[in-house]
Each structure stands twice: as C-alpha cells, then as structure tokens.
Length: 80
Image (cartoon, rainbow, N blue to C red; front, side, top):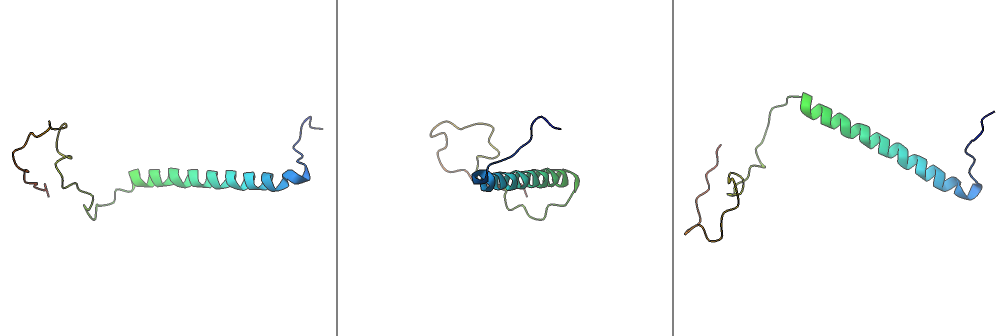
C-alpha cells in the first residue's frame, strides 16, 4: 500500500484538470519547438528569398559612427 497518494477535494477538481491540460500543452509545444530546431539545422533547404536583407548602413558597419560624421548621406549598395 502506498504511503502517499494524490486525492484532491471536489472543489479543486477543475483546477487539477486545468493544470494537467496546461502541462500537457506545454510539453507538446516544447517537443514541437525542439523538432523545429532540429529540422531547421538538418534540412539544408535552399534560400528562396532575401527579403530580410538590410538596406541601411547599420548592417555592414563595424561600429556606431560618431555624431555628424558624414557631410552627406552615403549611397547604399546591396551586395546581391
């Protein structure tokens, strides 16, 4: 005979059910997230679009330029 067992009173039944459902949902989401991470690293898909390429000078700059360091706005050239 076990020494301890879970026996919830009737008013706590709905909270126990809600907690169990939330725990199962969190576990499912964690497994889905880990699968997506695995699939991302090992699928080797080709890149279809470069729509997220930065067109501002912040991307290729190695640091923050000092205030008023340019006399005019420099032209942005894309590497593609």
